[in-house]
Image (tube, rainbow, N blue to C red; front, side):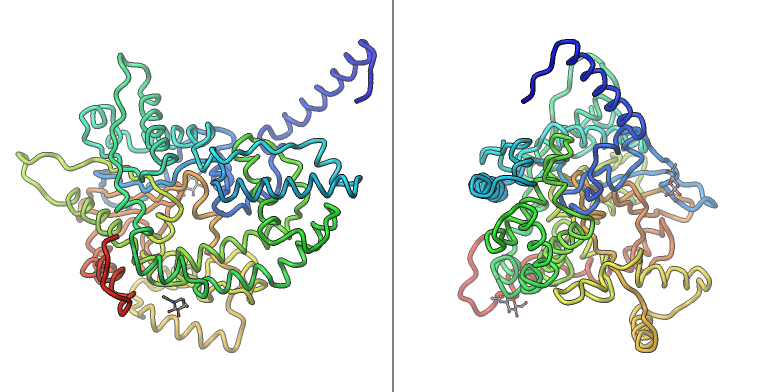
Amino acid sequence: MFRVSAPGQRRLLAGLSLVLARLCCCSAAAANVPNIAVYFGTKTRYEEVNRHLLRDVLAVNASVLKPPPTERCSPVHLTAVIRHGSRYPTVKNVRRINRLSELVRTEASRAPGGWLLDLQSRWETWYTEDMDGQLVTKGREELQQLARRLASLFPSLLSEENVRKRRVSFVSSSKHRCVSSVEAFQEGLWQHWGPSGETPAYSHRVEDELMRFFERCRGFVEGVENNRTALLEVEKFKHGEQMEAVRRRIAEMLGLPFHRLTPDLLEAAFFLCSYELSIKSLHSPWCFLFSETDAKVLEYKSDLKQYWKRSHGHAISSLASCPLFHHVFRTLDKAGRPRRSTEAAPEPASILVGHAETLLPLLSLLGLYKDETPPTASNYQSQHGKRNDGYRSVRDEELKSDPGSAESAGAFWIRTWESSLTRPVFTGRTFRTSRIVPYAANLLFVLYDCQRGPRLQMLLNETPLRFPDLPEDAPLYRDVRAAYRHLLDGCDFHTECEGRAGGRGPSTEL
Ligand SMILES: *[C@@H]1O[C@H](CO)[C@@H](O)[C@H](O)[C@H]1NC(C)=O
Ligand SMILES: *[C@@H]1O[C@H](CO)[C@@H](O)[C@H](O)[C@H]1NC(C)=O
């Protein structure tokens, strides 16, 4: 530290606050956000996906609800599958972070100077194992704010009366961060209605069969989760040329021998930048290590992992979500059924809180974000090209110009594949977990009562999301059911999850 006289100190402070004020007013929230924040995969903040929330966390855009303007429709049911909010690192990552900071601390004494010293003087580890994935204050706020926005968007469904009379169901995974999130959601609703007498009690049930199906599915646990060959692409990429180049550059900046900065420790440094932003809203000194190009490589690494572990990489990963799929459709069936006036009104809303590992399999089962070319260790270059909606946008355009087009999806694939032989079709991928499952990610199913019958719309992170092969934002519910007939009639958890591991001794109760 250097000494400054009292008047000097005052001048210094005045100067500093001027600079800070300048920084703050040019772009209040953006000034302090690293430009790599949009590449944090499942550790991305929700506001990176919905930038308008940086200005107003309660902003609601009612035009995202898109029943056909030619029909009179009103929403009659909302099912929301929601990921918990921002959280502390889990034990595994706390250990990695502490190993990294230990490495940096010891190496610094041997090779003082440069970047390392700067990092050491400005940063000290503060992560402890007991934090183990718990929801942080910011995460609690995310769920409160989401609840308030949904209550504004669906005032007749998430109404005070419906919640007080317990007509809305709340379900959570047993993990602490999810239970805290479902509580925070309820707090948000109470905040929305304003103070009115006593605070109601929380009401939710824990159902891991629905929200943590993945750990109960033997076919998944044995065939994917504990199977090293199932994630071969991830391992290859981890030790491939792109990751090595990033490691080499960053080891050099830190003054570390290349071999000491393992892929896991490199990732820990990247996660540190993400955690300090999502937990403390800090632009951590760790962030300055990474260029945007580096961040894209690390994002790809975690997308590869999610793709091969939780999504289209192996069918069993999505089939494990069959219980949740059936639960959602049973709820929608009940809500859309015509009923006599004497019958009890159906459930107006169902709030289900789980994990990224809950949402990704369900989205995959529904056929979403399935790119033509799977991401692998060797096609990094073609997977992160310019904006690309791949298969679906091309087909949407064709259906728009010729709504009667009866060409099947299969025929379309073949035609696209044939034409790809003569011209490059697309680069880039739609499967980007930074966009799909940030903290507080949410998949909404909105059922409308319309003149021609019930209609269903999906929204992901409050943005309309179409069903594959259905050309409307809110198709007739019976058309959605027809599109998923094969799953509605099958998709049996026990057949899928126990059947596949056959020939490995008697089935045991999980
Ligand atoms: C509101 O949502 C609609 C439909 O998604 C979109 O076209 C429009 O740009 C949004 N408006 C604002 C102000 O974000
Ligand atoms: C492990 O994964 C590979 C590749 O997906 C697969 O061929 C193999 O059957 C799996 N092993 C087990 C025990 O399920």
